[in-house]
Length: 303
Image (cartoon, rainbow, N blue to C red; front, side, top):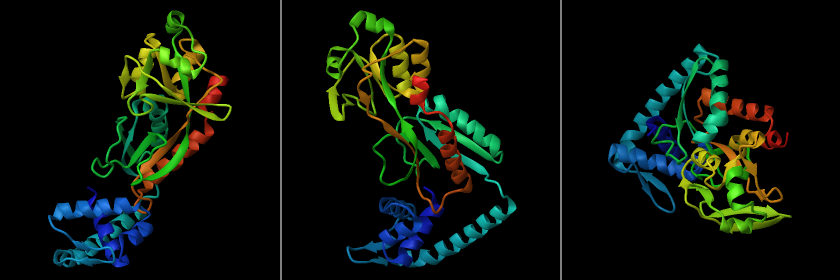
């Protein structure tokens, strides 16, 4: 738990009279404010606030701790101001989490360029496709490719992830090439545990198409499915940033070109705008700038 942020949340809730007002001031979701309060109370071992539908009031312990929290925040703000005056450049360590496929295909090189621009910043990159609790894991930024986002977190859209349906020529030689999404029911479809595990989404002429799929291999990381696809095990949906070089080289073949695969957003997720570290703000701006400057992966495929 970030105890300093939890203390700030506690003070803001008391001073503004509600969790909703505190959430607006801190630029957090109300659920995140509630989570910080709960974790602070778990840490001290007792309730700090009486919560009713109409108002909040301090418990006895809450009255004792409120001035101490204010003093702690004042000291922290003084230290932060002194640090900002000492250096005009972002500094410190950022903990980032991302899927393995995106980290390998793009993010690792972007991070390398970022720390070269800001030598005072270090990055600890945690590779995982599973959603983690940013507060508990002390993660500053999660880069996630999804259209279903955690409402407790602030999300900044970085780009769009396009996907492609593909297979190795050896698999298609043995099993034939599907001409419509419905024909996928007769094929071995390799599925991703966190997205479209049993239902793949397409659109054709503006009409959505949902196709039940199944196969002999499922995995929680798309790079594993990519290797299985290259080995001729079946058909898979792959992010274009991973598949594009293999499609251009002929190691994989794109399928159903007349059917659009559902696109996903590439998002940066973090806990609060107000408490954002200067290094984190610089990284977010850098990622947006770098993605905007580079060709989109769908153009790379066609080019």
